[in-house]
Length: 239
Image (cartoon, rainbow, N blue to C red; front, side):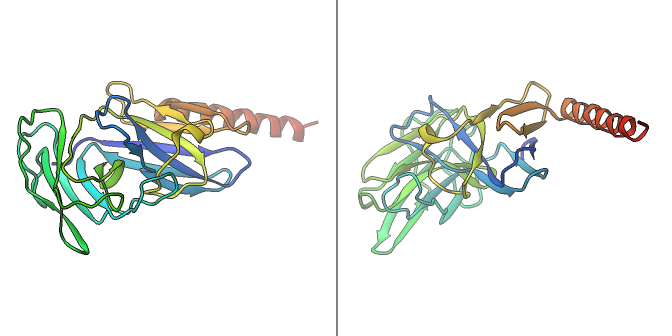
């Protein structure tokens, strides 16, 4: 079931060509050694605007990444719907909060509809099969059709993801699905939606700092700045 749509407008008023990257962090996710992925990424020239739209619809994802380290790409090979508010197993068409991850043949992985003992509302559960090899694949969760968090897959492990994500935005050189090194990222900003607000605008300024407002407020500021600039031009023309 599709949830409420959220929108983030990102305005590049800096003097640089950059990739605008959205990602998520969740210190209380509950899975050790989990990494954040570049959730969305779009290039932006100076004075241009890019738009990200999403819904809070979860999914289970996996990728044959090899060792999961910064710079590696997590390209989801399989995506099954997930719903932390529903206790039950997921299928390829039905969202639940439990799933299995298996390596049933030498060159193939797959999700399975596997129950997780003691599963509760509020979390997403992954049972990793004994046949899953070390350091060859990764499993995780996504939102709105794209991966957000991943962890190296291992045999015989049970994973419990309890998502309460915070959205972040950064400018730099990024590609969607890239494993991020959060500690080395330059000047990211968090994006928080107040109650009842579903559209925000983030502006990267000429000094490479961020200004974040709800979109109506940002539009008002842009209009005010436009009027000020026009008055300056007119004043200069009459001298």
